[in-house]
Length: 110
Image (cartoon, rainbow, N blue to C red; front, side):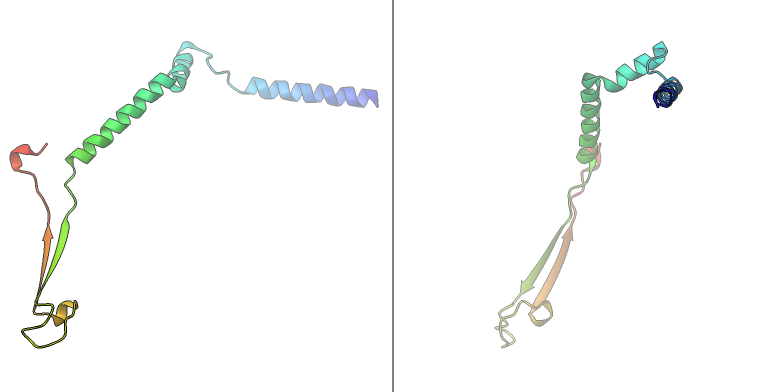
């Protein structure tokens, strides 16, 4: 039983050594070392995040503001028509709808 165990242990060691040899070693040359240092540097990562945030602020600054919607009901008490007070647009004196969008002056557009 001892030789079977030793043989299996030897096969296992050879198999793991071949698996380790098959994996590329990080930093095998100078370019890989520089790329690895660039990718894992926390200060550079923070700078990349700051640059992404600045890009997002540019997009937000150049976007138009949200449009607004207004609805105005005239004579919703129905005193002129003699009916009961209601907020249903088709049953009041008159209804006005307004959609507004603020647009920048042409010279101030970025």
